[in-house]
Image (cartoon, rainbow, N blue to C red; front, side, top):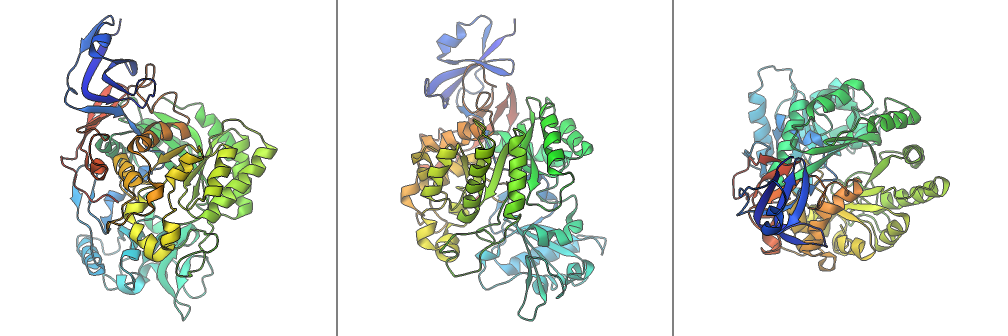
Amino acid sequence: MQSIIVYPARTVRTMDPARPTAEAVAVRGERIRAVGSVAELMAYPDAVLDERYADAVLLPGFVEAHSHAGSGNVWDNTYVGLVDRIDPDGRRWPGCRTIAEVLNRLRAAAADLQDPEKPLLAWGLDPIYFPGQPLAAAELDRVSASRPIHVAHTNGHVCAVNSAVLRRFGIDESTRVAGVVKDDGGEPTGELQEFAAMGLVAELVDGSGLLNISPDALRRFAQEGINTGTTTLTDLGSGLLMDDDGVALYGSTVDDGFPARLNVFHFGAGLGPVALSLPEAADRLVRLRGISTDKLRFGNVKLMLDGSIQGFTARLLDPGYFGGQPNGIWNVSPEQFRAAFETFHAAGLLVHVHCNGDQATQLFLGTLEDILTAHPRPDHRHTCTHSQLSTAAQYRRMAALGVCANIFANHIWAWGDQHLDVTVGPDRAARMNAAATALRHRVPISLHSDTPVTPLGPLHAVKHAVTRLTVSGRVMGEHERITVQEALEAVTLGGAYMLKMDHEVGSLEAGKFADMAVLAQDPLAVPAEEIGSIHVLGTVVGGRHHTTKVAAPCAVPAP
């Protein structure tokens, strides 16, 4: 008979309303045998006491339902973001507080490159923090006019390139691709918005960035999970699943010893040309779902409608952007979106749809209603991911249609001041990422990071959804605050539900996988403003223990 290991803790928070707290968790093999008092659990045959977590707090392992495995890849490039970041190995990367600091960091990185032809790749730029200070070809040419330079914006929807890149790929005044920004004279500025435009220079960054992965990137991504208490991750938008070698890359890396569970979503529409027809892609995903393991899940699809709010490429309903900027960019036409959504839905696949603006949410819901009328399907759990400007009426419609909402609470901190003052104005900003409204209308929710757009860290997302504080200390919509308990449920059972894994993970219950976050403090016992700073000691995944690489205290500013 396999031994039962009983792990006492200072506090066990189960997210199971039938037994919300306990003294200890009993684990047999990969699964939880029971949760209860030490005395109860030690009464089980062959029970063994292990007090390694006696001074810690145990919660269900956090579930991140919108992240990118390429988060482990971006650290091969030069970081030029505003805030300090910590990489998966625990190294702190200072932020660049001015455009001058960005250019100086790029110059230093260029000086380290031995090959004069090798492109300089960087990431994390966010010009909205530097109003009136552009960074495109003219500025990047001051770093180098000959070496190709590509700087990805932190939102993943925009990049800046220098003149050498424009020349190399023939981007000039004659280029007629949506998203190629031009000056008053019709010349490209070097800013490329959304995937059709960025795709013109995609060859330059092949194998790099958030949409590319490698075995090392996957392992670094998993270490980020350990560092943040996240035991279930997503690669929300992979371009590798239509190729056998791509599937093999995931399969050979995410093995029994991999320290997280990974859900891989096929990028089905919105990224550009696809390798297979929609019916062929759907058939292939159904077959791939059949080879899923306890650690690696296939059979899910991501569709992308619009861009980013802070990049002014999201699609907004009236009254539009605060400053009257033009509406954003559709990454796929409504007709193409309908065809893709209907095909994948009819095949029985789970679909998460990127909707930042409320016009994108409106298209998503209208299309889904038509599809469900033609192809009724109970318990589909299709998800509006980001759901940033979704309105109360749209949340009522989500509830009626059985839709989940994965809410980007981290925006409240990272760009809250900009949303209040620049992008959508104080009235609409107060209604952004409306977790309270979603819960009021009984829409299942989770909270996500979209890492590397913002750092992976469910405890930070909890803090932002609870406090709704911006960097300047303003409260961005006090009536959309939710409780700590509601936020913790969102990053555990909420994420598990929208991944159709809530029968396996998301709470500490007998029979579920023994996946736990090991914390130094109880999130329900500290001030809400301090939840994001709770030190994560490590994780337990399927009964195996994994140790963080981030030293306590974690004092990174929390975007």
